[in-house]
Image (cartoon, rainbow, N blue to C red; front, side):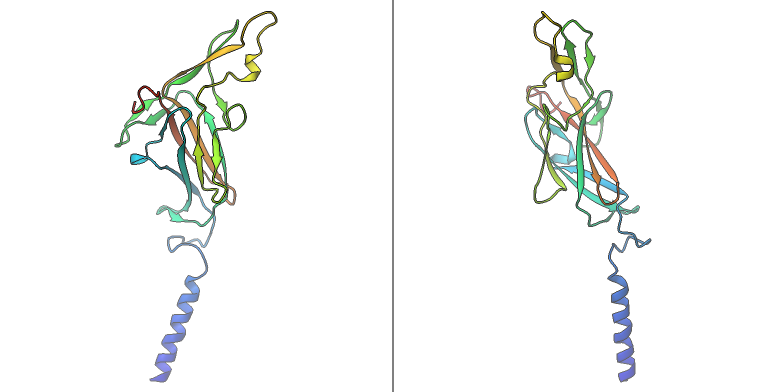
Length: 198
């Protein structure tokens, strides 16, 4: 009887040590690298909407496999880009609406839709949580400045141009997992303060 009990104890110990190799039970290839990043917002029904000058909390989680097995990897590089021609989820059931744009009218030039990286001044729209790189605040500028590269007016003329938002304009916020290179993104609608639920 003692041999049977001892054998069961040894088998139990071996089974536990086999399970403690790291990773999720959903991870059958024994890899600890993420293959996707999922971004979510702290808002009703995960609708990513924010007012100009407001702050939208966004969180990233790294996952692997068809069942989205959690991967414990918390190092991310974040970016934000002003886009054109996209749609965004405007309602709880996922119905899409077209995004607006930011129209730049340079002095003495032709107006165009602005598409740009928002990671640097004068925009700097991302504030990363210093205690957890998986959490940020996305903060679109309250007034959209005209980029310095096109704002320089011709000699003898007035101001360099005007940027006019057509709400809701959209920004693609992305997180890259620095351990695996997996990327996830979410489209954020920057909405009109006079009609924030558009």
